[in-house]
Image (cartoon, rainbow, N blue to C red; front, side, top):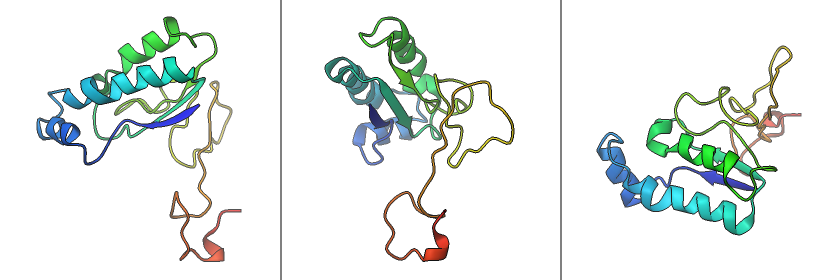
Length: 138
């Protein structure tokens, strides 16, 4: 499987689209979608963990088209699973499994596969040498 960030924060094509209020799709058409199709077909991914959904719509990311292809026409259609981070408003709604939000722990039974993305400490997704022992989640 693979983690895939929809964004490249400082990519000129992404900044171009963002500057156009995401009415253009230079970044998606030239980088994001070709890369995802290649990753799936070349490496036969069976898990795709997409991230970076909060800034632009699923229409901008062309998520519906990609996921329809992934589930029906890709070479891994019978085995692949994917999460729910494919554009604004998609968390806890779309995906073969959900992660809904960081540190998602439902209070009741959920009728859908889900993942709880947990950090090691309360404030960082990476190693943080300044974190105190009290800050670690146990």
